[in-house]
Image (cartoon, rainbow, N blue to C red; front, side, top):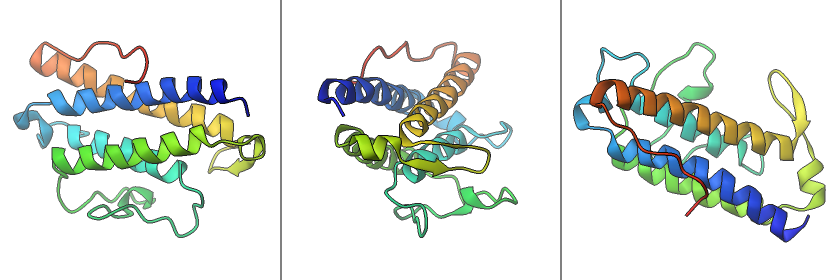
Amino acid sequence: MDKSFREMVWRQFGAAIDALEEAINVCPEKLWADRKRQPEFWYLAFHTLFWLDYYTSEEYEGFTPPLPFGLEERDPAGVLPERPYTKEELLTYLEHGRTKGKKRILSLTDQEATRTVALRKATLSFSELLLYIMRHIQHHSAQLNLILRQETGSAPGWTFISR
């Protein structure tokens, strides 16, 4: 796979992660785990990071996120983690996902890019899965920015390309 194409994909994928990071960083403490909000801010951020971690894994069988995170997100019953994760924990998880995603994208081979991945609702190539993940991150970043704008009157601006 062409190096310049991989770099272009990473810059946009990374920009989606950067947008999520900015939303997490500016969230005021009183909004972070506000139980009146459903879903809670911290949970939307965690949900997004969990699936980034999962889908950028080499193998899905036996996937385990780094501590302190668990597999509740994969529970069909919709079980939530025992406690709200802190901003610091999720920013550390974000860095884990950014590093993992960047490594996967920048080392992507033609064979890996066309590898078939079976999800619950679809079968697609790993390349298309990367686009799906990027859309998922951006979707929830936009949700978080809407919550920020509604609750604080302000939200981060658009992220053009990854830093």
